[in-house]
Amino acid sequence: MTMVDSRTSAEVAAAERWTARNYHPLPVVIAEASGAWVTDIDGRRYLDCLAGYSALNFGHRHPALIAAARAQLDRLTLTSRAFLHDQFATFCRALAELAGKDLVLPMNTGAEAVETAIKVARKWGYQVKGVPDGQATIVVAENNFHGRTTTIVSFSTDPDARDDYGPYTPGFRIVPYGDPDALAAAVDDTTVAVLIEPIQGEAGVIIPPDGYLAGVRQVCTERNVLFVADEIQSGLGRTGTTFACEHEGVEPDMYVLGKALGGGIVPVSAVAASREVLGVLRPGEHGSTFGGNPLACAVGIEVVALLRTGELQRRSRMLGERLQAGLHGLVGQGIVEVRSRGLWAGIDVDPALFTGRALCERLAERGVLAKDTHGSTIRLAPPLVVEEEDLDWAVEQLRTVLAR
Image 1: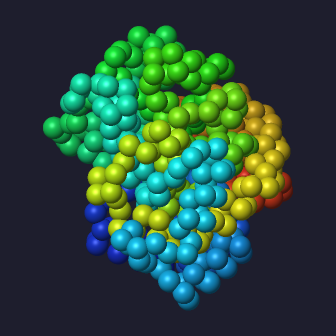
Image 2: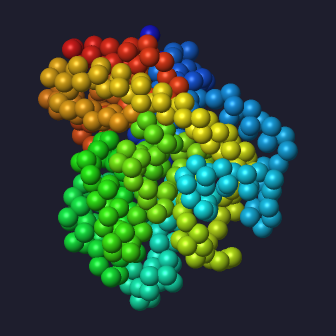
């Protein structure tokens, strides 16, 4: 069976005919999925090693999450925030307790949660810190990825995300990732927040030097600045802990969460922070019609319940060690470098052999779905429910492709 069969070819052609080309998907058309495996319209199975950029941390169609969604669909799906519903407070309390925070503000997408964090940080800066009106600044890191709204791309250093979308929103200072001294130098009396990813996912699973997050925490505490951690991809079990910040024993002032929070069923995001921070908002100042809707909350409650036991985090750590060992065994055999934390790996391939895109195409031909980023780098992020033998098999497929 060739990678692109007749039905797949027709679907790919139709998608190219009728949709804007803001993505360049692999020519795989998925029709069904369960756990860590998906099946295309021609009946071919693939191991999903992307997991929806961590949105599918718990796998496809997790029984507990599907049951919660089905039960809620039969009762109530939307009220808007003009009214309360019987799932709202339960979800907000569960997530606040998981994050160790006082308050939660539910939204929908990751980018929407980042925008929320930016607005809250600025308002906190004006009302609590005393920054002069209109002068708030936020420090961010090079090679960041926080979304693609016009404000967020204003502080992106990726030309694909940024170019041709100006004029850009002011108020951001970009510093090298992993350099606490550069970060400290960028902070002044107008700075209201430092917004960073504890691990940069889109950049290629870039793990900062040991002590970096602790250094960020120290600077923010000493200078009265909010430490805002974008854990949209790194959080909720992906790296072997509930939050990636835990690897350094660091607690940010605000978590920005999304992706896995919706269990791969509905878009759910949120920010979680103290009452002093999120309490600056008043009715009418920020909102979302669908944010915190009953269906989202019902699923989110079950997501938090899955994480509360710690079993999936332990599984991510254990399987991550297995994946790391397998990938490190390929260094020097076509792989230049491997960076991994939990079930999340960035793999730099010898550019003389493959681009990242070409390697992902070859892997798809062998039944493994992965995603390239930036030249000859690919990412692996299988669901946390993946089996040991599946991981071993995926590494073997990578070995076979590299040996060609």
